Length: 281
Image (cartoon, rainbow, N blue to C red; front, side, top):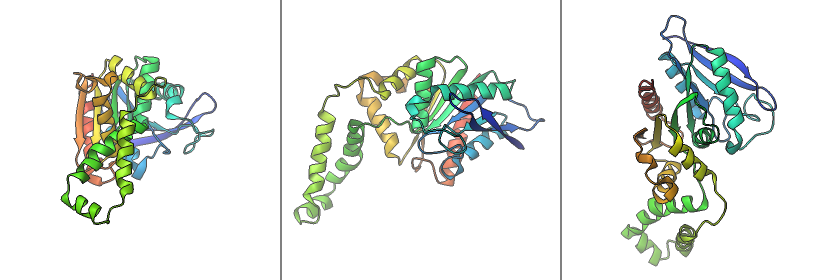
């Protein structure tokens, strides 16, 4: 199926943002659900190794209009860069834009990687925007000192400690005691209680709990950020049971890194998202 793309200006709080709309051709059956790609990190609308371009064209080829856009200070959007925690007004503007340029669209799905996934949850938590019918979240970002330490202990240190070769190297002077001290520091960080104010992962949990639409959770098999997210959701009381909600669909992307950089992982991601989209009414 042919896909048409056009550049648009999205009125933002300070200045226009640059967006690209991917549309199925005029002879295709167009879906009433559009996808807004929420870019995370120091990225722009193309994504790592053209990830967002490929996803947008794949979904548009199946009849779903897709908008990917640059936040201020990224890509071709002017202004100062903003934190993912401060993107709600910009996401709202993008949703307005896809409705304006695609009048047949009646609802949208937010699709984000890393802190783009986190920003999508924070948007639903802060706005309760009824136009958002679903969330497609890839390797959501919840990093804190405690979450990083917890993931490192479980997925690195415990694995190393179970290896006889590690102990032979340690007592043979081939492994520095610095590594042992780092393990101790990680354990102390995990035990330390967080007495600070509510953090963005708490707001994400609230958004996850109150969102009534379907949620697709994609986790890369070889990504520490994905492992941190799962560890956090399993250990923090505010996340208790949220990943098991009936609206949640979970899938693992085999042998994938954080950005699904291999062609196999990229195609698997596209397939997961499209099949899930087909179930949204």
